Image 1 (spheres, rainbow, N blue to C red):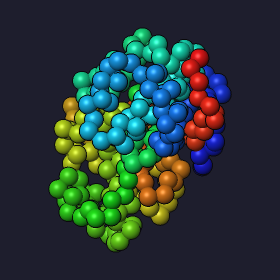
Image 2: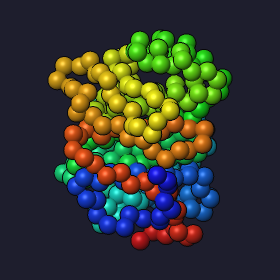
Image 3: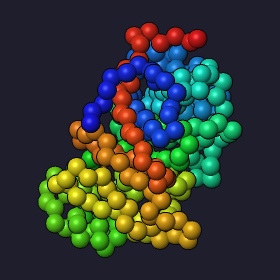
Length: 251
């Protein structure tokens, strides 16, 4: 599996297909000015409240790239899309049979789209100065901590962030925030095989671990990424690297 370069979706989403896009948030000033015009007044106000210019640039690009791809999937002007937000902040389009989610870390952005299944995606940058095992003992299940205790050095860092990103992806697919106890989510960790992680346990009334699928994504150096989809059906995953045209213009 790899990130296939592509500048836009080639066709409407098939029912059992999940498409994930990797994008860079490093955008030239000229393009950033165009992307800013794609955003809603609510998004522009939210960005204006951010303290750091770099964070503002990343948010502009994140929101605009989401609109850009949704515009192709739905055959609509990106500027006309009106988002609604769930209780914990997950965006959706009312009355539109398309599920989507996004996550960014540092200068990278991931966006995931499905025709009908709720999904969540998460991207985490590997911070070398963190005490991963100590954090795991505080927030992870006993089974997960046991798996991490068998790892050392870089493998421990990668394992920790893979579990963390998987947990966040599941919670985002489910529409929950990080106020949910992470110990109540237990996920497998096996770095020696290509097998996708599995949700061992989810302690919550009315929610079953077997209803959620986790997927491996192509490697992104110094990052961990996870995709979770609430579906029991067999799904096809396609992964792309977003390469925008040299000159971005308003339609």
